Image (tube, rainbow, N blue to C red; front, side, top):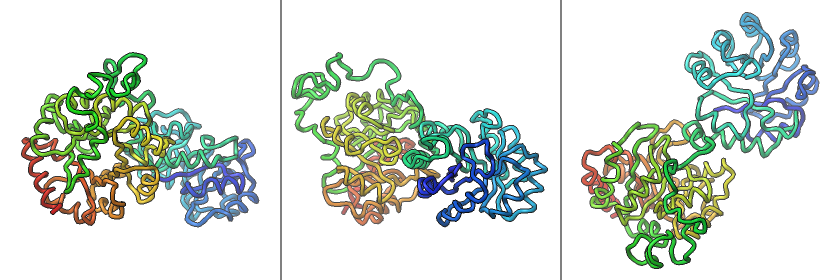
Length: 484
């Protein structure tokens, strides 16, 4: 997705935006705007724009359009006034650069017949997500979205619509005409989360699975995490008994212990549905398959706790906890201490922390890992790039997960992504997640990781299997063989 930041008025704006924007907009000769610059100013500013960034002359007064184009020769022109479709067609015939027409959603398809792109802006009337998505579906040219966009709402917007690009101005400013580098950077980070997870993370009032009834293991007002008794992590049972069985010492960081054993561990996953696969399993089957996974040889179980796209919940996690002593990983969009606390109360031995999502939400990964440590549970940090991996290790991560599915893009699976974990230091557990259909895929993961993988996380193929126990046994056997 492309980002244009509009309203450049000085070298400071260009410096603030160039690292994060694909295009910069210069509003030329429109005194009514506090972001307007003269032709002379625009010419000098455009000379300072780094290579590969598109310089867009934004022209609100069509009577000046031809003259401004001839004086500046920008990389693109954005007509931002009351032009007719015929005006756009005629202007485009006389220029040698792309022409973008700003308009309302109602007129976008008409302008799309003549312009190289249309930019839907609420200046021309309020628009609904459905209206914009309808234009995107029918337009023969790219559709750009503008109007009221800011770091605080962009994830919600991307959860509803899928434009070619975004155009932002006031939403990343300290005052009209002066861009805020921190806001520009945050806007880009959140935009880059993509449309797959954007709406889930951005939705305010989000509940990761406790929308019904009280919080599991909530206890009384003095017992935030069962801490009224320093020996009782869950605030229930006797001081040595987290779940009424065993010794509490055996339960400290037990997810790490389970997947760090010699060989290749198998983490199965309970996932009711997914954005790419739809419904995977009938709800009534979910708790019953925990025993099948355990009997088949699973070393740990991942439980989806995100309800909207994956059909999970913390109740599902709690149900699994009551059915097995295997270590459980709470998997979803956990963003803060409170989310981690809820998962721990429901019985999680580990929680998934997604580095890119946390960065976009300005969360401190190191602090969240420390919070997990204080609860004696493990943090599984999912990364998608070498930079994310390096910074996660620096933050204290000792379990790294690489997703073979491109969840921030087109959702395609590529087992070569596992190669990202080849250089991990010993002592850091490496999990390769997604994309395993059968034994041959496990063998490929071991090859792609240079033998570095410690565990594979397998969800969809197991959830779709008619015989879960047999499927898990097949995969567990393949894991032992692949590890030699």
